[in-house]
Image (cartoon, rainbow, N blue to C red; front, side, top):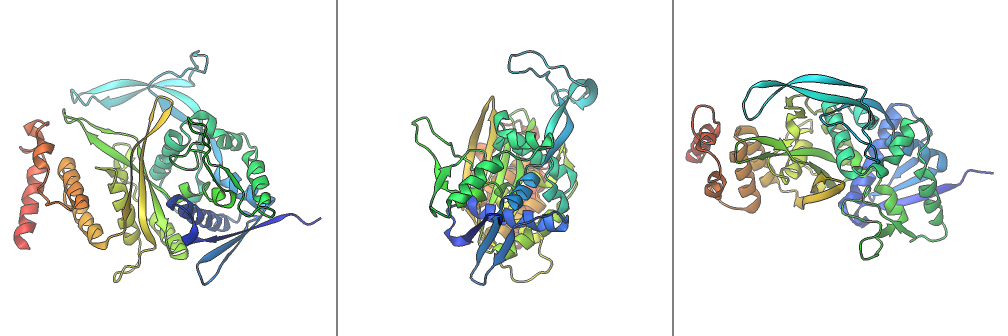
Length: 406
């Protein structure tokens, strides 16, 4: 008896959200990296001249996709606090380590105790295949664990792969896809681990559902998202990273985007700001969208006219607070070449974080460049803005110089 085959046809412009469109792009990127790694069997993907994509799936090829997408292993993870199980019984660490750290209040070095545990960690071999540096892989893994899969119960597919088992969710997804032959518009629940902002059932008992063929794509958009860490400056001058910004492209040219995303990923840099990649540190959440757009442009091999393969970028600033994943900011930034060029000047020429932050806010809000600096400066000590240790006077001087030249 021949193996059952499911045919899925997608029109990029008919997909309902940026997450679905990014999911289709992520599926194509995943298949491309599987080809590079010579992992089979693979779905058959056919692109037509009108921009539609047809995917032929069997249960076996679906297993290839899911087993690689959710592949995971065991790694050592450091924690400043001792862990406890669900019964609040302390879990014994593998060991503890003393590490030298600089106290941000005193500026002096001190010993900090870290407890080492063994944890399941997503592998993200698809990003590694594209040449993503280890620091970016760690950021991607951390963001998954602290946002989309921040609740331990949602990590089941990764836990299964870490134990060498196939992904059990495959059965549920495959049964759903088989329904399409009889009911083309069959719907199923959408989980928050697959769609930012969704709840399978909300507090009013209203289910969040979507078409099964479209829900399938939501497993893959995380492949082409880019993760950023917003840097917050407190009144005392102390800096800290708060949550993660997930930047999700609204793809409008599938083939062109897949090529450019692969190139962009290969060009990510290793340099660190603290323990995060320099290029991932942003001043305001909306900068994640600006940086995604700018990075795609920088990935092009030649100068000249720019043809964008995305229409916009959605951003979600998520932070884990206790057992809840909270959305602090969400938004959408359309592609605008003038704004992109102005942003690249700000990002490349100004170093003081608060100056850069206010310049970006003014750019996005369409205000004069000097707007809002009074409110920005009033809560902070004067040392943050004057004196030899501050980059603020240099940035202001440089900007006035540019203004005088125009």
